[in-house]
Image (cartoon, rainbow, N blue to C red):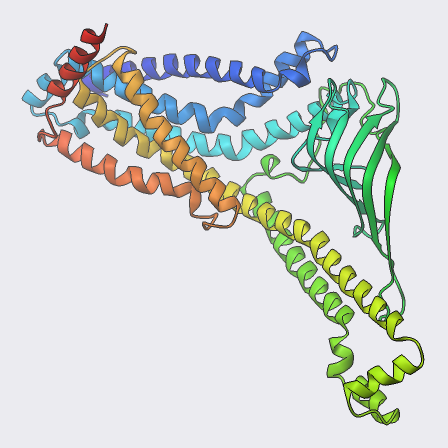
Amino acid sequence: MKVLDRYLLSRFIYNFIASLLIITLIFVFQTIWLYIDELVGKGLSIFVVIKFIALMLPNLIPLILPLTVVLSSIMTLGALGESYELAAMKASGVSLLRASRTLIIFMLLLSIGVFFTFNNLQPWSNRKVVALRESIKNKQPSLAISQGIFNNVQNFSIKVGKKTGENGEYLHDIVIHKINASEQSRTVIKAKNGTLSGHKKGSDVLQLILKDGSYYEDVESKDESTFPFVKAKFQTHVLNIDISSLNADINYNENAEKDYYRTMNISQLSYTLDSLVQGYRQETRDFGENFYRRTGINYISEGHLRDTLVTSQIKTIEEVVDKYKKEGQLTQIYSLAKDNIASLINNIENNEENTTYQQKLINVYRLTLSDKIALAITCFVLFFVAAPLGAIIRKGGVGLPLVVAIGLFLAYYFSGLLTKNMATNGNINPYIAPWIPTFFLLPLGIYLTLLVNEDKPIGNFGELFYRVRKFFSKGA
């Protein structure tokens, strides 16, 4: 390795490590702030808190590494440009690409390391975090129910729109799916409000008092021609949920395997995704067939109604109405038809939320699988955008390079966040969504690298920065 290569590599690694430590510290404080409700006031030891924060660090990789790469690249090349070392290299016949070859190799190795870290270390860390958080729920079992998502507690899947109260004991907009022994959801309970009680230390029962709601259950029947169900409204309904599995001492070494996308690597995600897609298709098919039979259309299409009318010597609808009107059953038939239609509508509404949830879950799995590869490539591409920018602005230190780095990172981050949210809702292909910011950055990186490498003028940035500085100095 030549002297120039060692010099550039040492400067870059120094800036990289310094930026990594500072940015990591910032995001650690942000993580503490996000999870402060789970860590403070639960009687946890400082060791548990430190362990929790350390296990959360791999989840910060998508935020820390891109910003670190951008900042260290701009600082390194900006400092070389400010001290005219880049000009000296170009005067000696050394191009920017030639001078940066060791940095390119370093970034290539870093991208490979990022992939293996994101694919292996992050799932392991998340499994540990899940186990630790479930153990922490012993201090406050009401943490077992988070708002805005379905929470699996024993044989219940509970979704809460909002939690209020000092300890989150007051629940609003509650939807509960009860899972039977066959792993099927045939019971749906909805309530406007609810209260958690009985969640004192040492208690194995989490009592959920529901108010102003409805109860719906599909009853299994051996007769395929009948579809019995139970439907009722209630003012108050009490559910006793066994949380004995949560009431254990905090286990530091528990290796809980959770069917959760953040705890899986690429091979596990691919396997689980196939199962989710097949299960979703089968459940949709079964619901469609069940709904079709409930409508009674099959009774008409198979000719049973025609045979009944012929046997009864009835030829028109008017004769059917007159027949049942004379027998005094017309009102009862109308009421039965109305109840049947209301039941069908209610069945669709109950299934709609579950279907939407499953579609979003499948999209999230696909998005996560693709994102594990896209992040490594993005870090490599960001180097080719940030390094030429550093050579252009010709400023070292943490002043202007930090401003440019944050601006570039925010553009990348928010565009990625937008595309991922759209992919989760099904508006964009989830396999493509993580790559969209990279698709826009790659041409920009190639363009800037070629211009700087060939020493072509891009614009009078010095004049621009001078005017900006002059403007702010006047304002001061």
